[in-house]
Image (cartoon, rainbow, N blue to C red; front, side, top):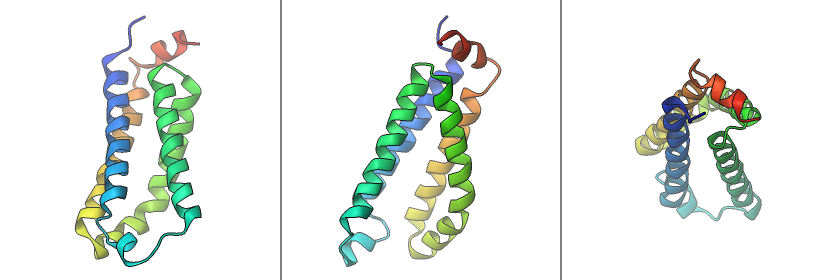
Length: 127
């Protein structure tokens, strides 16, 4: 069975969100990293989160149903918890706040796409 267009688009949105995360982290639009040194455990945590996101995105792209479920739980939890953070970041940097909102929106739309009725049979066939 061929990968549905909705899954293809959803996975590409997840990769785009991950790329935005990496670029935003490197550019540091809030200026926080330039004002103070970031402890190594914080950097390690950021790298670990990005690696997990990349792994889950890859697993979704090859049809692993468990990966789309895990990512869905992750993004819903993250979206709920990050609402206050995004508002605080907007006060520091409009660019950083909009970037965070864009990432969350891309991930939510991607999750909707990989859970559409046209995607379900493909994930079931990939066991």
